[in-house]
Length: 96
Image (cartoon, rainbow, N blue to C red):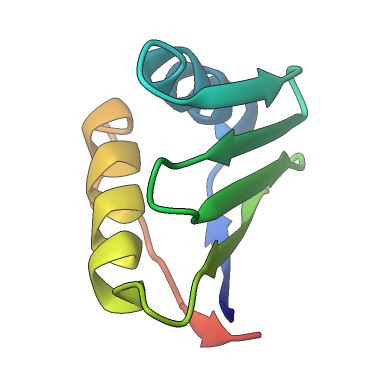
């Protein structure tokens, strides 16, 4: 498994977390509260988000045979759509 971690500065972390979780709940297995979300993708990847006051903390786990770069793009582009007022958000992806 490859792990990517990002801390995204935003004052609207909880709102974006909930919007993305609700959006993907129609297609994927999703569990979320206003502060935490876990999204399991059909390709075996898992996205975990935690909303803090000034950041949205993201952990993306992708199977070794998966495309980690593409999955990072999928997550960041979807969050940017919900954050259109302050987009583009800053995703400082790090290998976990």
